Amino acid sequence: MLLRTFLRIFVFVLLVVGIYAYVGQLVPQFEEHPPKKKVITAQTGRKELVAIGQELLRGKGGCLICHKDSETGNTRGPDLRQAAVHAPTRRPGLDGEAYLLESLRDPEAFLVEGYPKMMSSALKPPANLTPAEVKAVVAYLQSLGGVEVSTVVTEDDAAQSQRAAKAVHRGRALMDQHACTGCHKVEGEGGDAAPDLTRVAERHPPAELLRKLNDPAAWTAPGFDAGIMPSFAEIPEGDRQEIVAYLAGLSGIAYSATGAASPWSHEGVRLGMIILIANILMLTALAWARRRERREVT
Image (tube, rainbow, N blue to C red; front, side):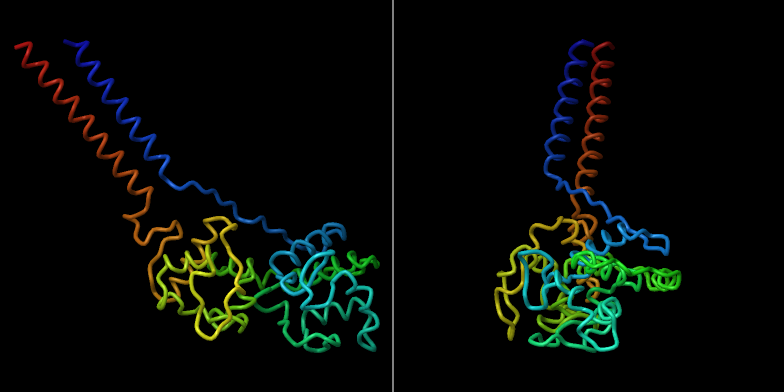
């Protein structure tokens, strides 16, 4: 009798474990690691400053949307490989470093012949660089052009950079990082080449916004050209969800960055409910087996 009871419990446990394993495979798996923040100080060495500048230019700064720093790239703006070489001749009274700093802080002060007015200050969105980060980019441009890296980050630059740093929604930070705000305006900041996204969730629910990120051809806003927006299918799923959550929140729509419209529809919650129900069933089965065993004994 005890052997039969044990076999029943053993089979039941195997069944429960099998259910857990199957459901676990259904839960989307993605891992996110926040980008490591590189703090620029007055003690940051030139080699490290150049490396940080390269990373900023190719990432947060969004410079390669219009420029190129290698053989291939965009040509809407000047070739950055020669920026530091030509810098001393651009503006009378400004040396190369001063010109490069001005071109990032106030791009409209001097326009290179043959190129339109299209760049916003690197200190403002979408790049939103700090004063120290601007100097890091200049250091990279000097290194890229093969000239002496003369840029130095001062204590004042570092202090201003710390004051400029502020907490923002991760979805908004990701939009800047992936250059969305280079074309779109959000909360009054960004470009005008694409639709304003501040209230976009009122017209398109989160599921549609996520589909648009994965497949830009899903729809095109009236008055704008199709085929311009790149696909974001290759960026981490968590990044796409964070962007959608941010845009949804701007319209007062609750949306979890895990992809669930409500906590109860999230895969983790559903898995927890299954585990709870399975445990209740297991305890019920044990209680039933114990009760039946007592009846047979009596």
